[in-house]
Image 1 (cartoon, one colour):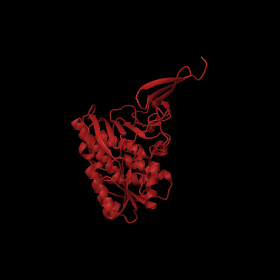
Image 2 (cartoon, one colour):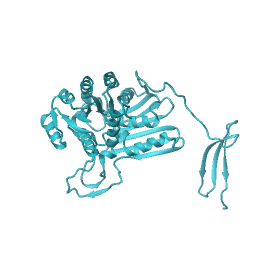
Image 3 (cartoon, one colour):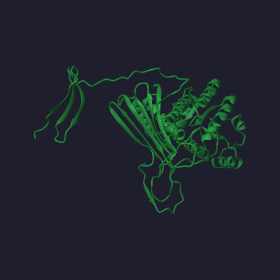
Length: 400
């Protein structure tokens, strides 16, 4: 497929590096930028045959099969309208919209046009995440009770991120969109999110939006999704996920402490890793950043979805649900209360009761907990099924 990319900045270059590194049959054919000098430089750097400063011209180029949107949030809707009119498949960077309503309009545009809308949520395609999700789907950790995702760094790279009108918010919409969708995947996309409780504040930067937030998302089956986001974290980019199930736990560290550590006096000028604030001292480079951040798997899924006429793992519908959850988070941050999630379009299950099953110890008791003690003996906490009395028994496993 021949690709048009809209945008020539930071994320566009990440996408271009990924596409160039894959050595697939898919190639960048057109680039659009509002500034001719930027468009031309991008075209030169990535050997893109055509560059434009008119978005419609770029999208409507006769050889373009699919369009990648790597633009500021406030430009997504207009770009998707052009793609829908041109009947070109479109892949849009996160977040899909600034609000749930804006995301719904984008979703309806692509569905009405009969084109694929792929939601470029790279952190749901990292190798560690994909392996973890496979384990969850294989029931390795039982029923998921709680999924927490954290993303924190010193703040975005472009000026428009810091403009509440252009971005739609602050750290919640920038980083929370990642964290919310990660938790949705682990808990189950078909499980309806029902309420959100969120605290947010502007703690460091002179901006109208929040630069720090923590939130809880309650799901219809009783599971809890948790997000922690900040533009106030110093020392790089911290990406961590935790998933707790009835039969196990997953802990992921996707960035910052990467297993690659280097000390430098700062004499070099090379790039270290995204959001790294210094090139001296102990540094944490990344071996293959675009792969570790999920871009490689993401684009492979998107292009194969187009080829095989199926939905990708992350769709415009997913982006819409995330935006609706973010809307509820902002309402909660303002009210200080749990706020319902307003989802006018819901395609999962309507309700799912709490499914709780206890472990039987014997005919008359439940097993609450079993633990090996320092002396090697086994302690078991039991509950009588009839009386509710909790008791403890010890099993001697060795001579003392």
